[in-house]
Length: 232
Ligand SMILES: *Cc1c(COP(=O)(O)O)cnc(C)c1O
Image (cartoon, rainbow, N blue to C red; front, side):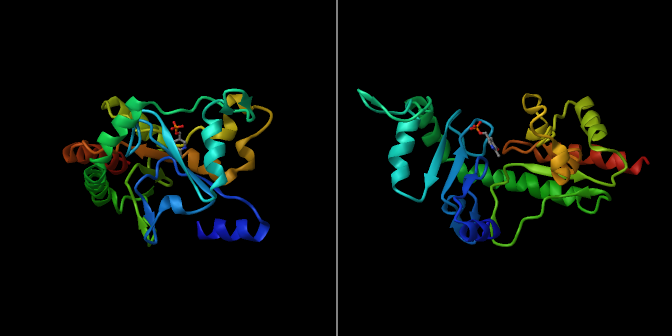
């Protein structure tokens, strides 16, 4: 963030963060939404904090409030004036009520996830060819995901995925395929232009991580992964 900020200042650019899954995180004591010109959070059901569907934009400059309020309501300014090409991005009362209920559980949710992540770290650390997430100094994480990278492991990422799936454990290949490889962008973009991202996308696996995941299940997942290494 510090480096992106420096680049933006040097070139007079605006910074908009995809902060979708970072709700509740802090960096150097500041809320993660305080960086950049705007940050966008997702409140989708799969996130640490959710209102079933929905989200929020936090922003620095006052003028954005009016603009965003118009844009989320078809660009309508008043009954006779539509001045922006908007969409329908309104949040309804039911979603808001759900969000208020879930907000009360945010701390407990993060704390439970922390335990899951710590158990993963304990059981998987030192496994050859398996990289675990490292939390940067100054970061207060929300433990939204637990992505690991298989690089030099005795099985490749897809083999691990298949093995876990056979045990009815469904990790996700986040983020794979890469956006620039989506079929809809064929001929326009390609992951050949982003070789580092392409390399990681072949090797990353995001292991199950949610507040109610039993620690015994974490043990089981780690056992299956480690047994794949020992067998070779
Ligand atoms: C979840 C997520 C999104 C999508 O959020 P929606 O609320 O479904 O639009 C976008 N970017 C990242 C990084 C996410 O984790």
